[in-house]
Image (cartoon, rainbow, N blue to C red; front, side, top):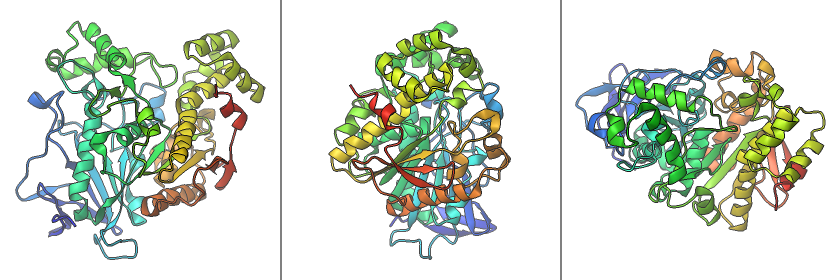
Length: 497
């Protein structure tokens, strides 16, 4: 047990961390500690450098408001109305939040070492998002006996630029620093450092796949949840392409030294101009996690297939209509005809034979819709199935798969990317969640999905059969959860050589 423990302070719950005492807020038996620094502000000499430990403070530090968010720009319309992305000004963006049942110990959910801990890593294509998004409020997890931690990390060129004179994957290094902070301090909030589950969505899930493969993150978590992500990384040379494109726009060398001299607002403007026409499916210039030989010695998919994190229990899944968040608001489903579909399939290196199977399985769908399903399956569902198969063959810890299928009526987005978030966090009542779900999302489905995540964090078992040769997938919606074996198997098989 850590020497850092809950602390009595006036006018609020307190916690003594390795850096000093925090004072949070208390409501309905849940304590929240917001904006807690886990590393020094990445500015000045620390810009484009690996995270450095926080210096200790004297007295009691207030922790009742979200800390600064990483430098970023809002989502472009119309996604800005669907995906809230608050911005909090300030330099100390390497901060985290903790929600915990309070008092910090003493009920049936507490094991000898403390309560189960979940650490949330937000998504946003590595250029958007933060832990301050209201949908990610940790109250429901704390209400149900889990200590919930959410983190900020550097984004865009600050977190995932590739330079010859700076470490790569700074955003991943930030995440590892936050997990080390959890390891050292979470007992002060009633958490068990040996029962940590990392979970994340989209770019956060891709980050978790990289953390599962990274030797620098080994031993920092016991379980992992990958929501709408997969083991995806690029070679250092390919990942450098976006940095070089931004450097060309700024007319400066593609070095950290040169970028450090650029005004942050001008840098954000150039980054936005270069990346604004990309998306996770029809990507042009986007940021990538890089195989750098340090944080990632090799491609994460290869490392995981070879047994990395074999002892970590894994839950992962996708949404039925992932692509619709990226295709529908921008009109791609309407604009893409048969000829454009074939061109984009060739560009995406999707074989005509595979595409033919999808067309035959979806005769009523438009070419743009079939293209979207193919692209999302290639990016997400097929790699997850392959990883699950590798893990079963390697006799690893249990692997569980899910699919989220409840259809949102908003803009006919259906079960699109990010829709499951309000269900996982049990925050359907928030207006920021309803922007994507509409007003009538089923609470009983959120109750079931949230409970499965809580059960997985506490026991390693979300409540259904682990992956085996029958390919069981727990489907959350359109009705109540049900276990389905080998969903859309003909389409999955179409990817096999």
